[in-house]
Image (cartoon, rainbow, N blue to C red; front, side, top):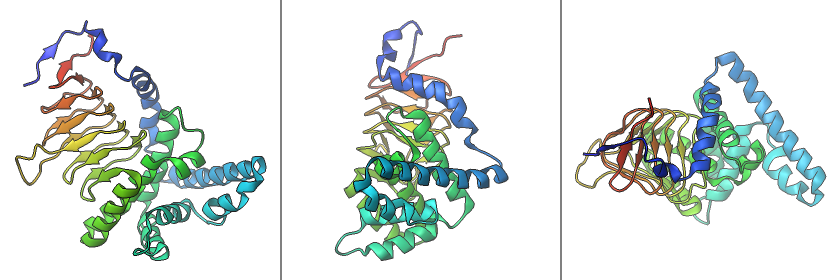
Length: 286
């Protein structure tokens, strides 16, 4: 079992302190992304209008990029269309038609309001919690963690509909292109940040709540000793540091933090930090 250690071991917090600070500072803001339906409808329009405005501004600064931004942003009528096109362009190959993939992805991404909300909540999460993100446009076009996550939202729908062959095909292409491997069966909430994203692995029966932040090389895996429900359940507002491995059907409580390179094999209570290999718990100060 993981033993609790005294709270005066402040050196344990040295892992990724800047991201920890930003995550904590911005979480209150990010937690407000769940809005009522009318506000979200208005926000959909505002975000897409803002992205188009950012593209126009970039064209004014760099006219040579006019065709690039027209193709990826300005020729599209919606965020879902631009996103589906960008994903299809990246994920298609000689055996997988870009046009066919675009039609599949567009139908899935614009299928229901929950998916549209999730896309926008993820955009806000990246802009608010990643200091390297310059704009919604920057995230949409260049952040592979965001793109891989939206592809997963499409594959999860396919998986839920019993279209497993297509779901697994797109998952395989996402893993090859973006180096992010999220099983289509995994359930992932809204307001998610996959920072840098390279090497992230999420297993089939994993469940991730809202407003969760992952750094690169994070694994939500199984121990390899069981079948069935075998992957972690991660609560809202959790931060998982670079290289951390969370293994088995265990619970990470809301607001918990997992230190970089930690190996977690036991439940972590809410608002507690786990660090080390094997991970030990650092209790919050009273």
